[in-house]
Image (cartoon, rainbow, N blue to C red):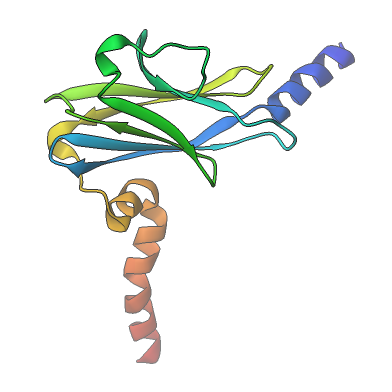
Length: 153
């Protein structure tokens, strides 16, 4: 029993995980989605893919084939800092599900899904990313001047 528990704990501790999934619009009809992930210490470069159900938007894995309608519309790439970015052209109106999948060799896949509504997309900027991902930090930064002003009275 101890050996089995150790095996599961080791497997959990060494697995990759997705930390954050953010998105914004590059222009009126194009989506940029960033999937930030963490990896186990000694691991090869992971593979990243974006899916919608069974449909594959794009992947960095050369062994998988992209779904035909997305060949000219979607591109996934891995960037320094453990970020997998999807650029998607001609985002349809309404809501769309996007799933980021991160997989290392000989490991399970970490996934995170987000629903994107085109009419609610913010333009890509540092401010829009901050609004989506760091609400606690944003609140602190907004109230800091008030706290300092009260202290000086």
